[in-house]
Amino acid sequence: MPVDHPSILDIAPVIPVVALHDASDAVPLARALAAGGVPIVEVTLRTGEALEAIRRIRSEVPEITAGVGTVTVPDQVTASVDAGAQFLVSPGQTPRLLDAMVAAPVPFLPGVATGSEILAVLERDHTDMKFFPAAASGGLDYLKAVSGPLPQVRFCPTGGITPDNAPDYLAQPNVGCVGGSWVTPETAVADRDWARIERLAAQAAALRQHSSA
Image (cartoon, rainbow, N blue to C red):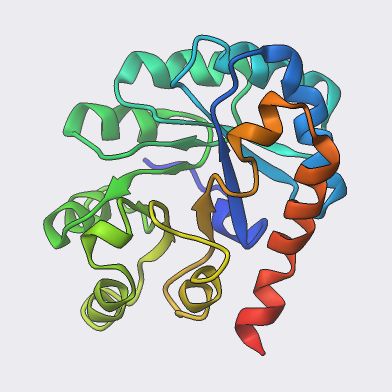
């Protein structure tokens, strides 16, 4: 049976997505996000430093919820949980990957882009999903269209989300949060400009209020 978890979608209006090339950047990055009011981060498996980064964040920045993204095969589910990941995100899903994520002791956001993919996840009694790639898959129009027949599903749209269009996404009743890398831009991470990331996090944290205004 699926494990009952609190929703990752309710922690912050934006889940920052970052690929870390140096695990030593993980702790100052996480502290900057938390200081800016965004206590969550998704570290992608696009680099070999991701799991070590998660271990360091879990050890030294307990105030932030640290998850692993770009999970594509079952073995990565196990490795991510063993490293301390508090949630998992996939760009898509297959029956085997869904089996592994459902069995994992942490929340997860499986990637979906079509009605059939949404139904496949719903068959596992799971209603929180990642809509990816959001802009290329229909964006706001698609989310509005599926809200009628599938009102129980909530999404984290990712892919093509910007500070300019994020409020429009967040205003949709079936959107819990959005995902994006603009809060943790590669240039800021490379320069170790943690003050800039803190400022961007503060702007991201204010998006929920703006979308409801």
